[in-house]
Image 1 (spheres, rainbow, N blue to C red):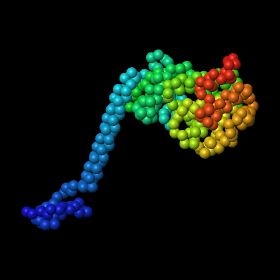
Image 2 (cartoon, rainbow, N blue to C red):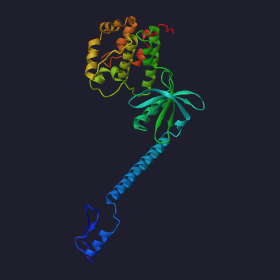
Image 3 (cartoon, one colour):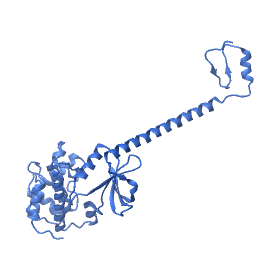
Image 4 (tube, rainbow, N blue to C red):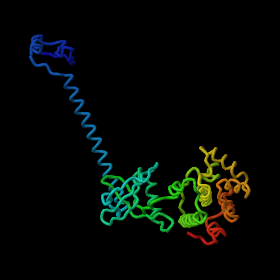
Amino acid sequence: MKLVRNMKIVATQTLRFENGNSKLQQRFQTLPFRFPWKEGCSQIQGTLRDHNQETKHLAAECNKRRRFQETKGAFPECVSVEEYESLGKISSGSYGVVYKVQHKKTGEIMAMKEEFSGLSPSTRAEIDILKSLGHPSIVQFKEVALDEYDGVYVVMEYLDTDLRRYMSLKGEDCLAMSHVKKLMKQLIQGVTFFIGTRSCIGISSPRMAPELLLGERRGSCAVDMWAVGCIFAEMVLNEVLFRGGSEEDQLHEMYCILGHPSAKNVESSICGANLMLSRDGFDLLKGLLCYDPVKRMTAEMALNHVWFEDEITS
């Protein structure tokens, strides 16, 4: 018996042989059983789909395990995240979420940052920098924690507030000048120590130096000191000094407020806060908000400025 090479399935779900034994064809047609081709194909496709999903899941699990071992190798002294109990979220940003946590054994309260990027080069750099720093004015690094797979958490000293939150609690009331002076000294001491480690400080847009807005790509100590000057002005004014929505707007704000660097320009912008800086205070602010980065006041010069010579009272 010669059967055709190509078998076809007709709509009636019977088999037809284009060339062959007609009795065999009749026999197939009289069979009570008809194989459910459509249902069978659907079942096969579903099984294959489930298999592919399971394969992808297993591959993802293997990758997580591999990254966990890499992280464990990079930080052999790390601990399990299960050693901490979460007490709530403090803040979140583009790079991670910060939680308030408590160590289950010691009861110590700490801050824990979950790194969105896992063990990326930027996370490694951040951890290495934090581990190398040890100064009263810089938040203290504690340890690295890992979850079951590849989650990386940086455990740090917990602070119950920060400058932004503290100033917001003050409402429209400006900080006392003695308090501004104390905070400025702590800030500059921390920046001085940080600069000594030859590390770069990340500057947010409202405090970016004009040279960065004009295209300079390299960070510098002068860039950091411009940011210190902006924070100084914000503590006095109780508001952001430069409010530009873009880099062009930011430069425009600088020109409107500072013009060409002079004591008169800077002083006129500060007087609106109903809290006057002394002559020495204005001199410090001018030195920090100098357009020319070469002439801008350094951290050491700022820390030794005559404005800090007056006794700082609490």
